[in-house]
Length: 318
Image (cartoon, rainbow, N blue to C red):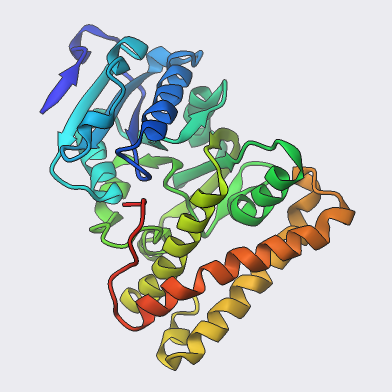
């Protein structure tokens, strides 16, 4: 099922923007965030260079803003039977009409110039099949700046470059490469499965800090993210033994100790290495370490679920 403007009346697009919602899909807050995303896309200076595809599950399509098409008349709305975020993304990429696609989550508001940066990132990261952008939380106050470092600086850089990681909430990809390696999406927050599959196939992964979105944030969402991350990071290593440190899952319960130690080490390292870039002063580092510790510990219960082979805990993520 598809609604929206007939693209045959438009100039051939250079890129397809695929929008999906992976968090609290049925909530009023989700609809408001999606409205902000559509408004930001409509205001992009290079708007005519893209086609826009919103993919929603038939089970939650009533949550889409009723004025979506008036906000962005070029938008095509596609309904899919799946309720898994990765499957919705794949459907949008399949429906796209260009060689390059930009994947954008419905709670990530693109900054002015985002679309132009997406187009240019293909040339700034020469040879990369996928280019991840920069995702920021609203940096109002010390907490916002610290949480940016803890949760978002793992895939940031001062200049366009290359990475072994990717982020599907704000990413530009060759259409065929994404479809070949995206998998079935049964595990949320398992981008390592996607990145490892692409790396094994010989593809390069880029990162471009000019491709910027602002991600909605509150502490309840952080708890949900951490739970989903804990489950996904263990489950992805059970599925794909090429994922770094996958050998630890064979240690049984001891692997959770190794998992937590590794997560804490990486979080503390990011606080020290990236803090100044996000405006975190040296005297705020103790607070950053405390919050990093709390966040990593919140991942442990769901990681134990994955280790035991249990289904993931109930979550607002899909």
